[in-house]
Length: 293
Image (tube, rainbow, N blue to C red; front, side, top):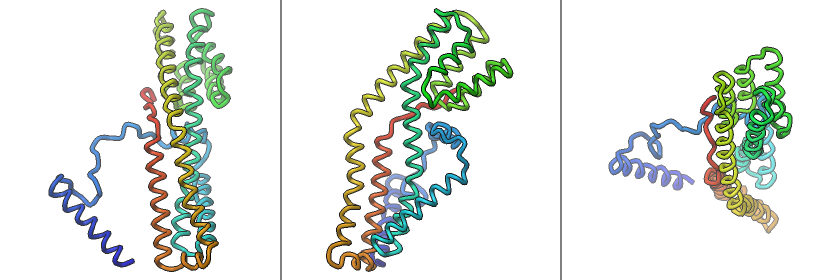
């Protein structure tokens, strides 16, 4: 184990020397930090709102993470009988609540993205053909929208009934949904409400068409990725099944408790976690930034 640690340190030192002389990189990191800000960075409040967890506090979130860490550590300890794999499995298990919330957020955003083209088209028809006022049309469209979006429209309607301030009403709706399409739609409605004119029909029609094109693109990409996502989950189960089978064969359990066995299990778990995270990032679809937030 000492030889492996020394070899790793030596290899990393060679990497630092090579990148410093050839590429001009400085520092002790594996690569220089980008000077450009990340365009897709969001606040944690927006992230939790998009996942439908705006009322979940940091304490509750930490309790979920701690519970999964304890569960993963106990299962690994029962399987391998050694502390190092147990700690590694616990850390891996602690990432499950975050992954579940991230999947919940993706599902809610997908529902909203599918619904917005139809809602914008209905909004255009109500304001142009039927003659509804902008607030009334907005609330009628929200009442017929997806279940996950109705509470935001209800909160906006309450704000309108209390203040009759359309700008505050739209701000409540945008804060509740934290969605880029909602931001663009609300900004279009606000400008039309304040300035008037007949251009809102054309603007809403263009926005609805743009959203339809975006939804079609995302559905096509998800369909192409379905097989890869299944393979990603299947590959995660194969090493775990082989490890469980190794415990039941001969003196496999005692082999896991040796220093070399603990190092092998630790390395395998780390590689699995890194590959799982890397594959997830490769499959992630881009999300739009909130321009008018």
